[in-house]
Image 1 (cartoon, rainbow, N blue to C red):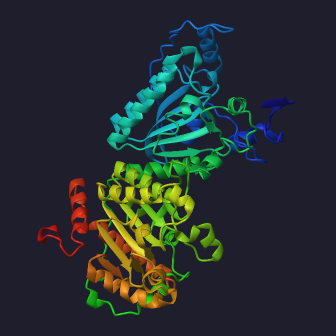
Image 2 (cartoon, one colour; image 1 turned 30 degrees about the horizontal axis):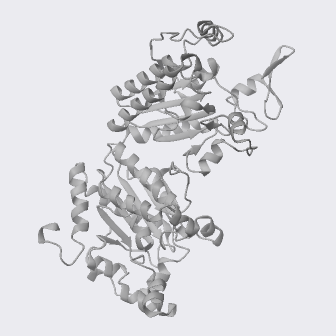
Image 3 (cartoon, rainbow, N blue to C red; image 1 turned 135 degrees about the vertical axis):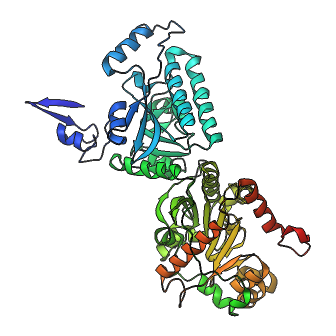
Length: 554
């Protein structure tokens, strides 16, 4: 709310009631400087904040303004429309435009809550659908900025049908490989929340925005329970795996620009490099298997996040499985590798007991595998290579994981990765434990560091089962064939990356450079191959891993 004191306009924050000088309020993008409350923006204010200067071109879209039901409550529907147009200067509750964000193009459809609560009527559905069609025609990303109370009641079931209409338009963009992004602002409810606001590839939200199907008051009246204060906040939804990023308004342009730049450069091939990769088992010394297990578990070894910072550029983490969870043992997002955009997925441990506990010791839950699957599907849609970094003692074995479908989640990933139509390169950077590792490692090229391990089971587990004695773990390690030399000889891995003297933890920068070069070389090997060739290569790579493999399967 605003109030005028003397000749100066002051803004009173709705949350903390601090008065803020109007010019300071505008300079801070209408965010309270005291409590961070994000004030509501008009559609045009939003567009001007997001778009590059001189790169904002409105789309001239028709507005019919029909009254199919001749609806009257306390006022006729046409009178309400006329009043909304007079107050806002808009034709309808959405403004569509062609924009650039940090030089990357997009088609934007921005809702305005000031126009009948941003409600979704037939004209709004038509305009958003046309914006999607324009994005498809130009093959540029579609950005949807939502602010709505839901479907427009005055148009009855026709408003309801706009949910299906807009969703069908987004489905066409999926099939065409065009990136879609939604920016959820406060509030986003009802038919908008249950359609285009939440069915995009990436969901970004402003802090404290509310997102839900039914409003708080309706829910409380229906179930007759008091709801918690964070109910339907995007922060809670991010924890539950439904929102990728919660971004303060001052950083929205930056984060959107990063995503749009990846989509714009999806066909980039990157630079060619010479990599130090050992492909002959005889080039590797025979090592003590149990010592290699201890080396692979060394907490000084760089983790996936360390490599994302050292070997890649501009890693942008995306979160959530869109089912109900966000597993901290799996980190994923977009990044750049040797001048090419990629999707990266890593199993994350830590360097301290606190970090290990926070990351569940690198043991993914079903949500972790489903998050990885979601990112792989995004890569497949956009034509981006997939790079995975393996480092886990195994998938999390707890009761909750089993009840949430741990085996199903891993199985789904194995089949999904087998059919990806983009290059996939995996590297074991520490422990490769059982199906928990394989769940992100069905790749065209599989690499490992020279002191890493890859095994069907941990040596301790094998010793307990077969020797009936956990103390036999060193003997089990030697028998399981888990060293880099063993795995290269068996054909389980395609190449081994030599570690710096003292291991990867002794010189993380050198280790990251060798990893980067090896991954780039792996992607170079598949440059120019189409989706069918990549899928067939992956099939034949794993088809040959067995004693009865036909001669032509290699």
